[in-house]
Image (cartoon, rainbow, N blue to C red; front, side, top):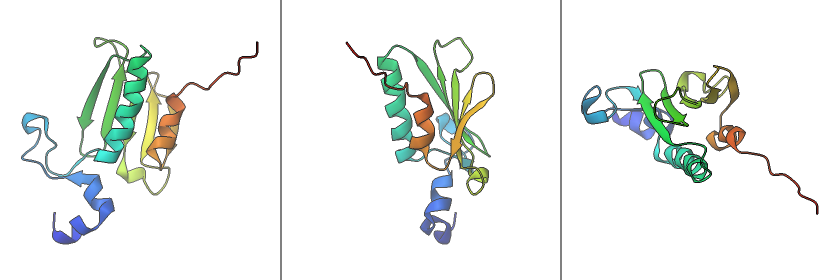
Length: 128
């Protein structure tokens, strides 16, 4: 990346150059990654769901065209949800999406916190 690319926050948060492709689990050259703020939002939601006993495991995948955060009920199952960051869709539908195990897109948008809200249970009014 050049100095001009690093000054642009959109480009800098979109890709990172690491030590090599997949070396010790670090992102390689020109792979899409989650930045620190995005990871905080993801792990806040993940922590709440683990505390509720709904989720137990997660994986992170950094690909050339997108970054994927998968959550699992058990480690040996298919992912319950995939939270994807696809910068190519940032100007059209939004870079972030939540995809169910069936492949249906539950929510897509420009703001990760708003997209993750689809995973939260709505509060119920209890009248006694």
